[in-house]
Length: 118
Image (cartoon, rainbow, N blue to C red; front, side, top):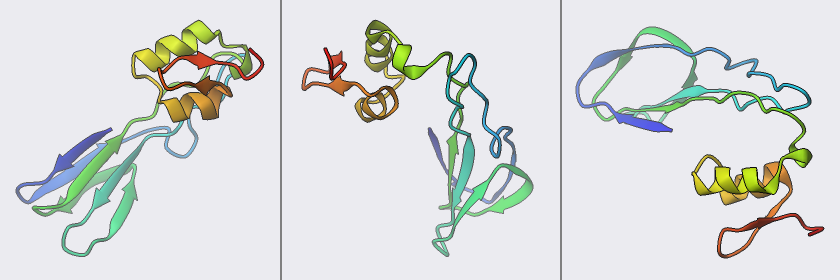
């Protein structure tokens, strides 16, 4: 997630793919979360979701948020090894909430993952 605060009048150009149809998973993996570009206008407070834009005018104080999507998953999530989930959590690739939601694991106060049946 990248945030860009616009300091001078400028034109936005973006060409983000896989926003409507996210990258698919392989061998039973889930599809990825699609990418998006969000423009928050300072003057009006309006928020716009964009994927492709050419010459879109921005003003000082506007905020552009770039949220790039990822690749689809590989294999069923319930078969992912706890060591690999732990590695992704430790490396910051996934959050505690994401680990619990997407892999049906528990994350303790020390950041260690386990399956409820363990």
